[in-house]
Length: 627
Ligand SMILES: Nc1nc2c(ncn2[C@@H]2O[C@H](COP(=O)(O)OP(=O)(O)OP(=O)(O)O)[C@@H](O)[C@H]2O)c(=O)[nH]1
Ligand SMILES: [Mg+2]
Image (cartoon, rainbow, N blue to C red; front, side, top):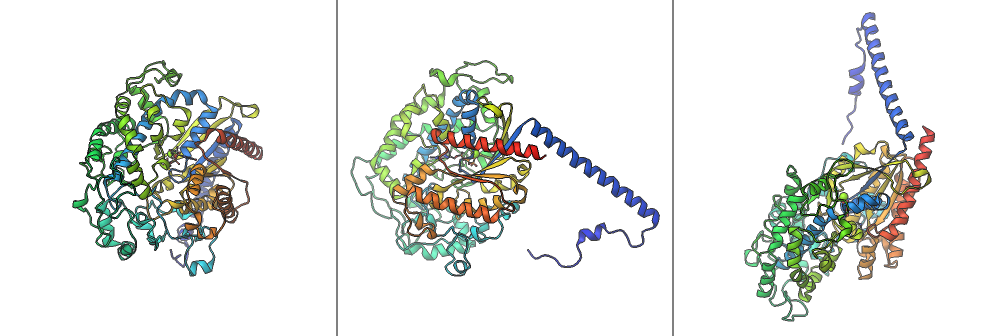
């Protein structure tokens, strides 16, 4: 933005009038003195409050990172480790979330099978969208001017715009994140170039107004759809998905807003019958949404998102019955805090009433998680009845093959429980610790969780912890700033397994690129200049599986070159890049710790969290002495 030249308007406004009389001057000075006294009093009271907080030993930790980076999971790890009783008591409440996760995974598969790649709501961000090879190395001028191959986010001089800019939506910011839908000659990831939304309608709109869409049009001839016309490689008639060819639209004539002829390309009677048997899941989904989303929370069911068409009701038009438009449903979210848990507990949702009132007077199941008694839960009953069909669907070779071809790795989705269907749909099912950590429930808003460690040693005892968990999607980043004040440490989560994925909320943005941009913004933020940073390079388990399956980092991060494509080398490389950004962008020198994590893994995360706890306490004590 151009800076206006000339006198500062604020100075102008504050300057005394040229014809000020001595009396007016005296009045003005007195008024200014009064204002100064008020300001000093406010400063003093803030300082006193801060000192009192330090004395009371209140430690504040902020969890930052993009959506699905693992912030809420990290918080759950803290709770599991340091308030285990409360964590155990609440496990049963996660069953509804897990039920919803299962239903959503099934829906994803049905959508993927039922709709061609161009229509499916579940292509990106889990389908290995491939942007052009990019470098996350520091921007070199030659690179920028030459190939333009680095992630532009790394190149901008200051990350603060991430906070200051208004929430970005859709493709409006494409100029800031110049992601050209680059098509590789091998056409390996055609789904990645599907621009914008999964909704054909919104794509249609884009195609008239954005030049990137035109690029897409121009380039759409140059690759083959992996599923364009061929059936799965093993066309065994025993598989559900293999008994019909796949009449996907000719890429030369694509896109059609609604290619009605191909609305449901799988017309195998076996598949149709199976879908019909899964129809009750629609009801389950609606029930769960009603349970999880408070009645006054309208936004959750109307949130436009990657899968949705902006008005999905989360349960009405999926593909269970093959009648809907199959464009999925919004991801259900909760506002952080005990609200949704309280609502579930109050509704009792069919859980047995083992417990009485808790100390705060609220009623919640207290030890149901350990009894293993049968419960009356309609959703669980329906899931239990559908479990054989779900298992059949998930284990069907033909369907697996379609998913493979479409690069849809359902097992890497958050909230994946399909390998545990027998166990998690049992009527006696009570979520384990691992299940709670694996469950996915998106956060919207910012909230502070207070707790005192049940399990505390030495100097920890008596310390009150306040962990701030934020919603990580792009539109929410601006809401973080008010929480930057008076923070002892930040844990920043960068899910490095996302190097071949795009953001759910903006499919033009590579996930790793977004994490780097966000990291830069956090490092350079002046309000956080003296806050120690802890970096979790997270989802290393998924990263390892990806690398082992042959997906190469160098395809997405060109600067990686021909280094070894294994977890150790990749994580070291990315760690050094994040560390370099920290050094370069931090306004002041400060402590920085980096860990390669899989925060769903209880064994490895316990040690890391203990180190972070010690480090935060140390820092807190140091700061207290300084005050
Ligand atoms: N396999 C694996 N899954 C993880 C890991 N970390 C988090 N997850 C899963 O990823 C999903 C998203 O994690 P969340 O903790 O909900 O992510 P978040 O950062 O809070 O996301 P928002 O609330 O949208 O901002 C959950 O289903 C987690 O179980 C990890 O290291 N490995
Ligand atoms: Mg969250």
